[in-house]
Length: 458
Ligand SMILES: C[S@@+](CC[C@H](N)C(=O)[O-])C[C@H]1O[C@@H](n2cnc3c(N)ncnc32)[C@H](O)[C@@H]1O
Image 1 (cartoon, rainbow, N blue to C red):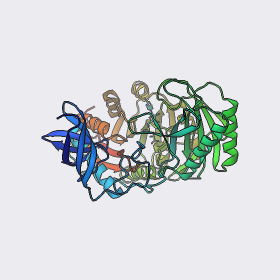
Image 2: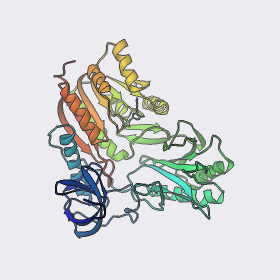
Image 3: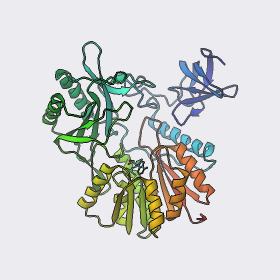
Image 4: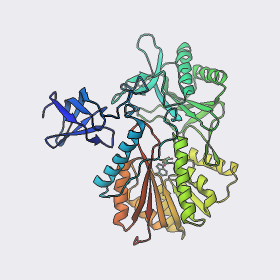
């Protein structure tokens, strides 16, 4: 097989990264923007040892599930890879992605139910992080998402998956920022002032918190002015912050943020609890869908335990610990981000919760410390690590610290399957996996796996 060759293929399924999979003489071909059952004319773009990549030249016979994307920028912008597929079928595709990951990576054959659909499939995403740059000649600010597989910014004026007010705020930043002479960031030369605009939006009270990420260690008069102008223009903006980031890497926010005007936090409601959090704290981007997860876990605990002790590991602003607090006797949480733990303390206080112990520490260090200094065990551990999943050492320690169940919450089916394989090798039993669609129109899928530990030899 050679680059440039053309083939007629039929797409079998999608990979865990949302690419169409076809086979030619047993060789796997990954095809972008393809839907299962599509019959396509493709052109090979790259050949590797065991697989090749290809682009679509012509859709010969489209899948019945192809639809017109509701966003005109879908093909250019890299954010919504599956938007040309009807939503019900997106859920089926994600079900299959989870099933395949469990089988091929975890060696686990378990029936995966359909993902719980997101209650909202438009304007669902409550966190917007637009990189900012500027045009070469007229020096106008541009802001949007990166083009697929590049760092070229698509100047997005309207994004249907985020609340409309975010488009208005960003347009205001482009216009007033340009008038004020604010320069956009240039990654290659590490020059220019404004790197990112980050907006957190609340479904609870429709307020927004805006953060400017600047390539500086001071706030310029122009950024100060722009912050005040936004605050005056939009009643729904509750505060404007500045984050200082002079790093030459892709990290968006550093830990160094100050509030220029208004509040330095936003509020969101999950089940019956109101959370406060700032720009640096992790918070689920689709709170309506996240609520389904918290309810699912809470109901599981209510139906199977009587006031258990719960360990919330990788807690963020302790969303699990706090929403579960009234069905548990005690919750202990650990999270490494200082700001997130400070906001959790505030939420615990405001909601008058008295059975939570919060720790600001690296989770691994905390597990070691617990095992050395405390005799206690937790009946349940809610384990919600970042995408890379957990190390074997972490899993060993969690097994030692937990007596009954691990509730593993994961945004990456591949690392979940790998970690489940390890836990099962230690005698744990997989009770269930339930996917939840938090990231509609993308290939991402969240899963909650319930793992029983009664046969684990510790
Ligand atoms: C996927 S988020 C889950 C947060 C929370 N459970 C929720 O649903 O909002 C993972 C969290 O783990 C935290 N984290 C990452 N590495 C960590 C570590 N080594 N120790 C403690 N926390 C860590 C991150 O700051 C982030 O808040």
